[in-house]
Length: 296
Image (cartoon, rainbow, N blue to C red; front, side, top):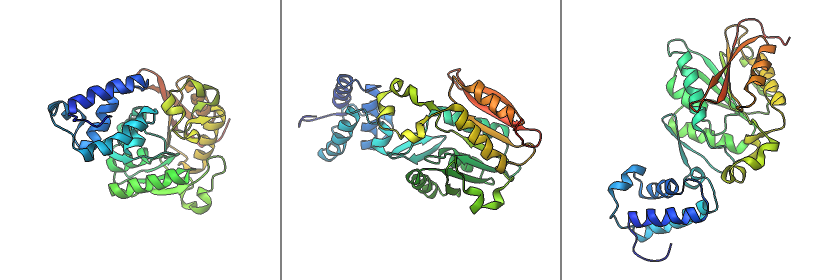
């Protein structure tokens, strides 16, 4: 970005070409996202402002953002914000960026449970808090808990809850050595719903990921060593948290291993079904407990 007079249109055109040269994904969208953030307008409104000149202070804000995007850093980390299910969340390096597929998971939960009867829901591996906070906003009479291994992720989630004025009970915990019930024994066999979008990309798939995911998003939120180990731990944890009858688990899963997760759930007495995402991929396993929890 040389020192010259810039309008919205000239900067959009320049930014698109620059990002194309840097092989950045969605080059036009990228410059639109960054410029709309700096100008504090909606992205599509840029096209009503083609002749608007940019002030020097706006260019000073935009320049380092363009440089970061040119290195393939995710847009959400650069602006620090992301929209999720009608709420705006803060995100930062070290916190998984919420995906549209996870919004679909929230939609499945809400579609199955109206607002009449209070529920208790726990979100395992909450990250930015996106699932827990979206549920709490839509079902304010529900009691919502959320855990994560990452202290930095929980700080972001707590701040998001504070900014949105939504009360969620946060707890730092390790799925493979959980301490939640030791500190909150009242949660034992009390939850109606357990939801989780855990790390489900296998380590050997790392190099197949897009650069902006592989190089910038937290490994601990992306990768697992084994689908069976990850989801067995989740169901084991669920055994101690869910009500013994008519409770449910909602999992986001790797599209290639949905059957494996379904079978794990069935082994523990759940009826389990696979649901597609909007792209038609096997993305969710929804399990319902109709008998006392016990592995077969």
